[in-house]
Length: 491
Image 1: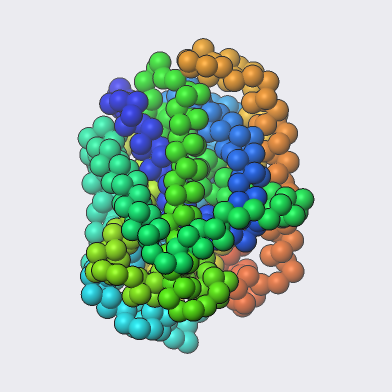
Image 2 (image 1 turned 90 degrees about the horizontal axis):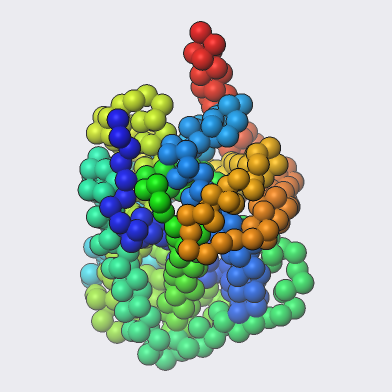
């Protein structure tokens, strides 16, 4: 069967950018920059982009385009002993797909709530109490399903199902050609609206004002590299999958540079938008910015709804903000679903339609766990171990395999032959030394921190069975699949 291909270079780049641009760009990056030296953080961030983000993206575009397969097939071609790593990456994507879609469902709900600010004056109590129904729950005591989240959850899964079912050109490419321009326009409109408000420039100044003393702090550099690895969708099957549908003659280096630069540019725009709103909120409430700034779910669904209440014409600005969250989330979720379906299609020979039905149907059922009363806590715990342990470990192992066990210069030569401009020896040095060294430092610190104290105050059993246990099961299943393939070959 002839492999599908992207219809245009623009379609591929917009899809790759759509994968990289996600919720983390909006609610994680601004706070991380603020916490790690403001404007000075952009120095290690840009350095990380040049020495880790772009080189890793070039590598994955080259591997995917050369071997024309998802992560398991690509890693098997590199070294048959490492096919398990490809399946581990596919399972990382599957788990992320199961809970990430729930946050999109929240954003869909809040787009509607924002029309008349249904969250009222106490957005904190509304989100955790009335909306999520969080009570005396835990990751192991989930309570009942919040039925009002079923419809937005169906809508969120439907978007990814339609994209994966219709294929690369007819689904993923078409949707991203609409979503990505709309997302950038929405953010620019919101920046234009927010920046004109009193106090907004103070908030933006808080974000951009450099604290150069932080430059010498290793934690700041680790944060910069960590953000690059988190946000670019490299190292866990997604970009290998997308690149496997590239035509034979595709400009690898140019595509990689554009994808990374557009993603990082969006992160900075999102930071200006968020801190402009926080600056106005601090001014309106006569508080210091440090008293209102937050990150993650709390920023999106508690802090910013409070800020929206204070805005002129909140019934317009609020829905636009949450619509931006929905667009960013859906474009990323489509790529996550595609990484899983590509791996399954390559392995089983199933049609795209059958694979999309099986994965999205199964995914919807599993996602029901995360719309229970304790779903937020389960999501928090699973997300922490997937992102801080499994994903970073996957990145490290892939770079080690290609950088040290394969002939890296062959992939450099291939990328250069296909591209308008060439990358030099710096690319190999970044893959073999800089990226691997930083990943070892970050992963080591994460593991040491995990054993010093239980993340989030969760119980020992929840940490052991849900956190570490999930990763162990994924590894065992991946290794079993790898072993079964070897037996088939020997037979």
